[in-house]
Amino acid sequence: MSKYENRGFMPKQRAFLKLYLLNKIKEKKGGYGSQFLTDLQKEFKQYGYSPTHTELYKTLHELTRDGAVKREKRLLGEPGVNFQEIIVYSLTDEGQEQLEIHNKLMKVELERCIGLLNKAIRDNYGPIKKKA
Amino acid sequence: MSKYENRGFMPKQRAFLKLYLLNKIKEKKGGYGSQFLTDLQKEFKQYGYSPTHTELYKTLHELTRDGAVKREKRLLGEPGVNFQEIIVYSLTDEGQEQLEIHNKLMKVELERCIGLLNKAIRDNYGPIKKKA
DNA sequence: CAATGAACACTATGTTCATTC
DNA sequence: GAATGAACATAGTGTTCATTG
Image (cartoon, rainbow over all chains, first blue to last red; front, side, top):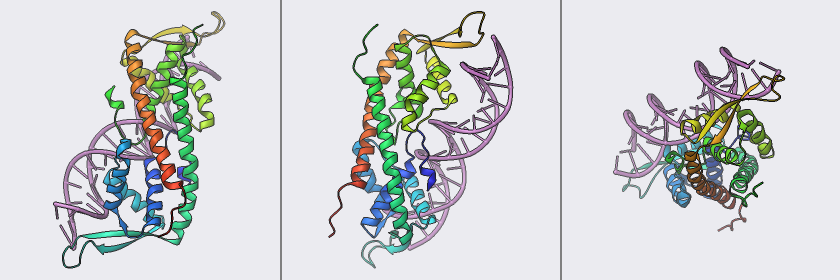
């Protein structure tokens, strides 16, 4: 997971989504992809951010490959009424560990970026500079 | 410049550098590329961010293409002593207008992103959630 | 038609190479 | 050798197409 420590400019969207997904999957079992997607889109709407379905699924796939989450097929809605298949996610033991690590790294990363953005505001919108 | 309003995830590095460069060029005439670069790298060091020379030059080129800045060749150091050629930048009238517009847009964008990052901290590192 | 996923495409950005004084 | 720039390469992510129940 060291690829998320990469002190660059801003955080990667993937790492950001991973943070949310790991924590959401931990909190509430039985969540599935398009549900996470619409929830997050709703949460972020007022911040002008709307993750795409592909990026969200790719994040879930990566978590699966990492062994952090496991997948189970389910049928959505009443049996016999609705046959929509979904894939629900739950945290593995390894995922629990990864979550703790990722949370820790991302906290630092988020704070670093907030610091950088705040600096930009201070530097460029600060008090009027004295002339001469 | 409407391409920087694109309500996505995080701000684009290019737009971020443009903010700094426009304001730096306005403040202090006679600045040149590699000087801006090392200054910015120093300023951002404690934030773990180190822009590359190419990205910085590309930003300057874009500002030039936009007619926001104009370029003049100069010789660095004492004449007859050092023949290093540099390119100094200064703001055009149009650049002054563009600076005001860009500043305005970027303020909103920076604040939006700070909000988003702070939300992520609240959401994922907030008070322990009650069980049941 | 909703959910999932893959294939493809593009943009932003970094790495490497080149040029000039 | 420092400053500038171009060429090339890659990563991250979005758009479109496909599949399945």
